[in-house]
Structures are given as C-alpha cells and as structure tokens.
Image: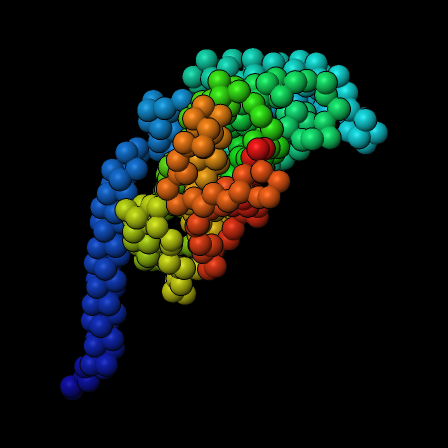
Length: 383
C-alpha cells in the first residue's frame, strides 16, 4: 500500500527564499547606513572641533573673550533680573530719571556677569535663543541711548555722552557674555541701533581724543560675520547632540530602518553646511523617510530662511560698522587737518551751502537680501 507523500509547493519555498534574501539585503543596507552615519558624525565633529556642544563652547571661549558663551551658569543673573524688574513707568520714561538709576543697575548686572564667567562651569539646561530677558534689560539700553539723542534730559556734556556711548556698546557685548541667550538677530539690531544713535554725536564738534573712544569701542565688537560663524557652529553642535539622541532612541523617533536613512540624509546636509558655514544654505527637501516621527528634531529652531537672513544681515551690519568707522575717522581728520583731510575710499564728500559736510556711502544696496534701515544714510558734520 503506497502512502502518498505530501509535498510542499515550490511557491512557498521560493517566497521563503526571497523573504530571507530581502531581509539580508535590508540588514546589509541598514548596516551600511549605520557605518556611513558614524563616519559622517566623526567628520562633522572634526569640522566643528568638538564632540559635544559643551566642548564646542569651551573651544570657542578659549580663543576669545566670553562675549559668545551663553551656556555659562547664568542663573544668578537671571535671578537678579527677576527680583529687580524694571520699575520705570511710562511717565518716567518720558520725563526721565536720575541717570544714577541706570549706572547702579548696570554695575550690578555687570558684576554678576563676571561672577558667572569666573565660575567656568557651563550649565546646559536647554538651548534656545530667546529674547525674553532682553525685555528685562530694555531700561538699561534705553538709559544708555538717552545720552545720545538730542532731546535727552540728562544734563551731561557731549564728552560725557561719548564716554557712555562707548560704555553702552560694551554693555551690549557684556550682556551677551552674561549668558542671556540673546540671539544673533537681536545682537545685530542692538548694534545697528547703537550706530544710529551715535549719529547725533557726529553732528557736533567733539574733540578727536573723545571721538577715538568710539573707535576703541568698535574694536571690542566681534565682527558680525565672524560672530555668525561662531553662532552657527554652536547651533550645529547642538543639532549633532539632538541627532545622536534621536539615533539612540532617547529622543523618540521611529524604528532604525527609518532612522538611519533619515539621519544619513540630514547628516550629509549638515556636513555641507558646516564646510561652507558662511555661505547661504540650500533649502532642505527631505524625502518621506526623513520626515518620519521625530524627524523635525534635526534642525529645530533653525529654518533655512532664518540662517540666510541672519547671514545677510551680518554682512549688512559689517558694512555699516565700517561706514560708521570711516565717518568717525574722517571727522577726526577734519578736526586735525582741516581741508587737507582725505575722504575715505568708497565715500563721497559733499559740502552744503550752510557749510555742513555730508558723507555719503557709494555702496549699492543689495536688493535680494534683508537690510537694516538707516544704516547707510549720509552722515552730517558741522562746518
């Protein structure tokens, strides 16, 4: 009696083999992505000169003054601001207050700034560029600016105004050093505003020795484009930390089969941006797998438009600082050499019938990028 043998259909065997082959190829591809991502991470860290945000900040701080070290232990300063809020009423802002109010507060904040720097113990609670604490500091900036405007009720001679104008610029850079997380855009706006206020000083006859204080103050300002590069290095170092947290699953996200290809796409873009850190960035157009759950964490808070606009404004401010510097230097030359003063390169000098001198920038505006209004308006010197 023959017992029939039940044979498995060849189709099931083929499906099993194909499935096994696909799984093998999938894991092989995933392994290649993992190795490629690890290589990209190492290359990016070498380009940043650091393996972490904290190390990046420390490396940056070691090569310059602490004006861009926002991760210092800033809590004593924040506590002071919270417990000593601005008390100026709208009426006081119009009528003015004794300038000693601003000096006392300025000195207290400045002392806490240096105390924070001296601790040399960065504390990373979160990394966000917010201007919330700038609101608490507005009276300081307004107090400094009161010295520079023609309608100021502060009874100070012009020479004293120049001294405090220089101090106010130091104040702006110093607050950044205090770790208030003032972003690049706010810094650009403050320095641009400072230059606008200083126009009043150049419209009066002030001794060359005092005018040189403005030049000395400018020398203490980190060039805007260089500041942009440093800020972006910090941002990208932070992005790397987020990416690695996302990679190991501590920041959510999907399965490795989605994560590694998504990371590969973003890391490749990040590497290109770091190599050309002071060039406009190309917009990211991530494929579907790079926008899976957790994907937006990659470059959180740094849109392409924000980066490109900040870079453009940094160039704009750098040119504006140079124009202001040329104006101050020309005014000094006029006071010292009279009619023998030579106009700076790229500048047109015109005399008005009243005898007033106008200094006009020959710089052509760049229409396809953001601008800082008023930064290149002519300077007017007394006869």
